[in-house]
Amino acid sequence: MSEKPLVGVLMGSKSDYDVLLAGIEILRALEIPHEARVLSAHRTPDELVDYVMTARERGLKVMIAGAGGAAHLAGVIASKTLMPVLGVPIAATPLNGMDSLLSIVQMPKGIPVGTLAIGKPGAANAALLAAEILALSDPALYERLAAWRAARAQEVLAQELPA
Ligand code: RP5
Image (cartoon, rainbow, N blue to C red; front, side, top):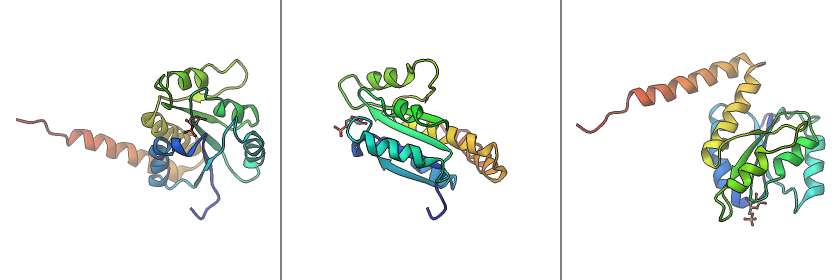
């Protein structure tokens, strides 16, 4: 994307990318400038904080954070910014994402993280929620979002069952 990114998509590991791609594809479809980075709350804490602390001045408006296991990425990001943070739990351990879901959803009072579903549906909905947030002040994006949703409805109405 050549325009300045509005959405930052962070993931704790490259191994999370396949899941986050479900959201990135929606950002692309809605023509929302975005950037994706691998930054870990426990493996690269200093670089993560640097990224978050400069995000606002670089024009970012919403952050999406996907992580698995003891998933503190979204919470650490939220602790360092007042922009909305959307957390995507990823099934990366034998606990199948329940560990990550509970880690992200159970933020203590005062530092909110909007928590989505485990896996690709959550990543996709994080992108759509980011789009809805941005569309509050972007009428053209609102129209693209409305068209996107109308197209999904048409897909359902066009579905045919076996005779
Ligand atoms: C988390 O640990 C990452 O977000 C990832 O979901 C999980 C496993 O990471 P890798 O060991 O695959 O790098 O920090």
